[in-house]
Length: 165
Image (cartoon, rainbow, N blue to C red):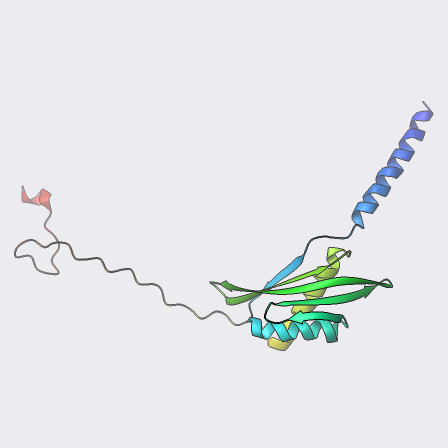
């Protein structure tokens, strides 16, 4: 009976080490946020945020294609990252932009943290997003008038066949 606890201890340590390794594994997913501003408003603000506010090295950028490649230094190592801006439309808010950030070999909380700080900067510089203009309700298509009986007025209701008996 004394040997059984000895077997459990190494198994428990192995399980704990495996869980710790999984918890600190870098994320491979992208993090994103949708904002209700125009692309033309977001692009310069986002690039300036990455370079000036975050101090990241911009490796490449293309406003027409909507991406920025950057380099992040963390724990004495360099990591490649990207930010994409994707134009969109929303019926309730009008023009939208999806901001997607990915940093290779880093946990996703770093991407989320960058996005949260970027959103704070966007709101401080651009204010709250404007609501989309209200669209007039669509009119129902006109239906052709039903055939009228002889001597029936244009606005008069059609005769009820049950009352004619």
